[in-house]
Length: 172
Image (cartoon, rainbow, N blue to C red; front, side, top):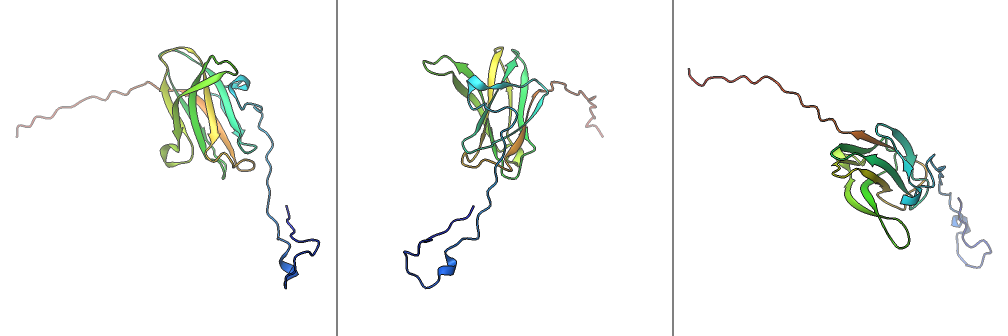
């Protein structure tokens, strides 16, 4: 992309050589395999244990993903493998009736988990049903190359390790 100022010579100035910029690099990204998914009515399904590779192909891109939760189960939702320009924000929501469009009410959010720009939510569902994961770019005006990320949903491990307990007498 190049910009040229005063190509008709209307503005008088002593140095006409600085009227052409050296250019700015532009980078475009193709939509990921799940587009168009910018609202709940177009959300694609993710299975427990599946890894989806996605990107923010344009400014203001949001990714809506739906999944089926079981009551009493704890799930972990994570973004990872972030591209150099990616900074994800993650939200969980449930669809509510609305007069115009399906409305997703957000009840959990995360940004910058574990000291990184990736996001993580661990949540125990009291009610079974269809829920939505919403992934946004932290800066909605950044899109295109370098904004790729992965999204995973896993069932949280509930295994606990019990070690033998040894008591030591305080008698000398």
